Length: 134
Image 1: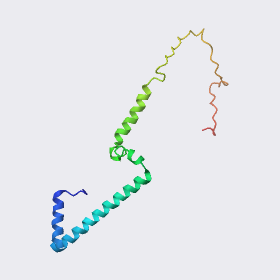
Image 2 (image 1 turned 30 degrees about the horizontal axis):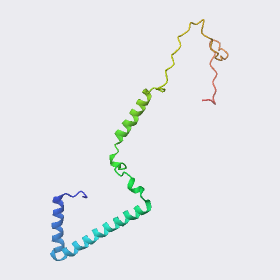
Image 3 (image 1 turned 180 degrees about the vertical axis):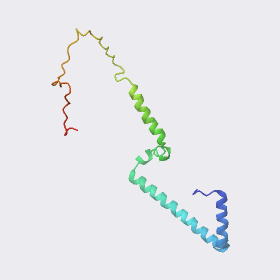
Image 4 (image 1 turned 90 degrees about the vertical axis):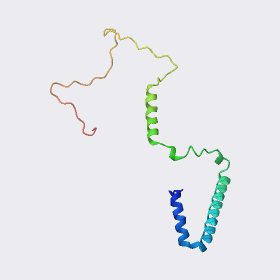
């Protein structure tokens, strides 16, 4: 309650009694009661107006789930990092049989790879350098 404990509240009431005096204290207490009732009436009216405008969806909202105090950034980051690790270790095709890697064939049986090879540089010649490409 506004960071005031019981002892501090008692001290504030005693100071109010001394400052206001016993003849004005009931008048100010009645004004405070009217203020509190008016604030409650306004809050109730705002709640009812919101309920009318939003409709029955307002009753279905789980407000505890939307409370920002429940979010712990350390837990969220930890879960996000662990999700990535778990996804990395999951097999891609969990139900499909895994293909068997072919045995390495001898060099004589292996087909030649067709990789385009450019002109060879002579010994001591520097590689071409494109200024616009870097």
